[in-house]
Length: 95
Image 1 (cartoon, rainbow, N blue to C red):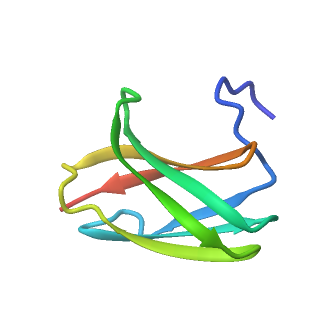
Image 2 (image 1 turned 45 degrees about the vertical axis):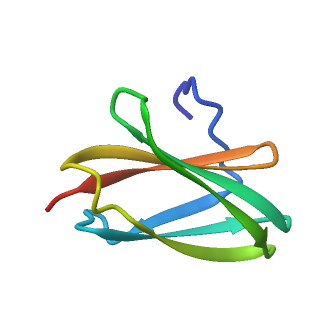
Image 3 (image 1 turned 45 degrees about the horizontal axis):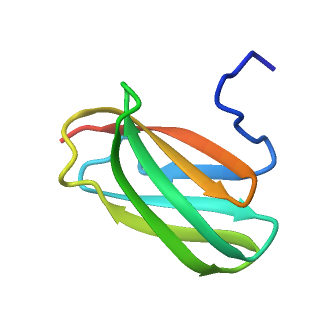
């Protein structure tokens, strides 16, 4: 595995679709314990442009849709944080 400064976990699977996105994306992720998670969307400079919390998640595969219409064209990074696990995926906005 390449060196990575962000402590990304290989244990949590995450997918974003469609990718590229126009105005609305779906985030699918697999968690190994029920509870809460935080979603953070950052631009390429690392600035947080959107964040939200998810409550009462079930163990296993979860999906959540989110509006991307306020984001401008470009490359973003979606990060999900649950307990001590972090996973991320690149997100491209093309309108």
